[in-house]
Length: 472
Image (cartoon, rainbow, N blue to C red; front, side, top):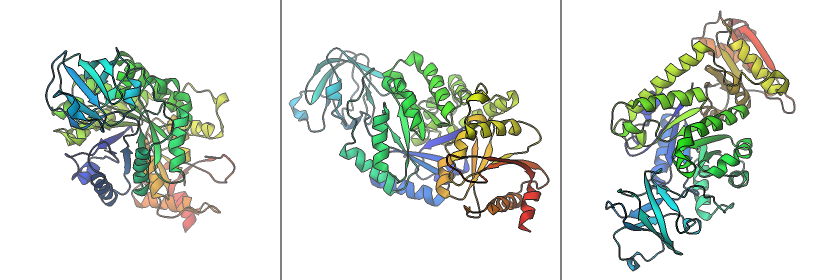
């Protein structure tokens, strides 16, 4: 099953339990909005109410945004407006249309005659002049440039590879609060991603690389090789590249990620109309369907659940479309990587591919991966086109696995031991106790004997009662 990510905002900050009851297991927070104290309270609430749920925190990072100090007035086409640094003397400009930005790198990136876009491309400007601390723009349309809206220069790229103090502060916040994932904006090369991962070190969270510009597409292969997961931020990506190509780019990115078993989150405007309307557009329904068919691991709701009028209806709508699409995939027996030939598979891939054949047959009533670290799931999720279970003895691994497509993580009642495999028999009894039929055959995959580089090395098709009987 493709998972749903719900962004928490003013509308849903007191609704964690309701969202959890609707099936949300991944909650997102955006540190570009609200105070640190607000985010800390939300994290604590999620941990208390839904401890097995995952928390993603987006940090501001390289993303250029307006701050809260912006003109509130509507401008007309042809209006002169100014983007300024936070330490610029705004009184020196005789204008009502002044907008402070959070990242002074824009003053190095912008050049006279360029086009600049804001708010995911909804507003556009010509660059009339560039100073050290302010940029003069001419508006190309009527509009309002609100606070915390993104600013983009198409085909531009970032020169910095090192973390600044603000990045380190937000990363430390994520580590100290033990969130599960941190979203890093504008990851466009492996060196920048490595610097983030090196700073985090052995701490949590795991890094999600946000793919948002043309350079990231060019360097996608090297980014995927070191990413735990990626996010396709279609808002920035469409402006930084070409809006007409966003559908093709999405398919290509997901295809490349699926080959490596890297989870992919698809974000931006999945159900944008449901900010105001209780029903989605037909195009949005089609978009969700195609994202699932492409092989997306997760679909993300942003403003829909953070500040929209119909946050719960948005989740129910998305879940309904995902369910129908998954049924179609199962009915057609579509396999996301069926074109991979056995002669190019490594050991873990070969095991996972073999399990996919068993899992697609009627003899097996379900697939159970038993894994302490969850590493085997990375291989299985590439080949299994329906929901399967991964049982682990770690709450942290449970939260890591929430982000994988078609994976239903389950916490073991016993701790796994390295020197024996008796936990497999205890797990069988646990499954019987929660209602699984002991007289049916299930497929188990696990590591029976450890070895360098081994992720999975044992496949067993057996009756639950037969495995559980070893405890008697």
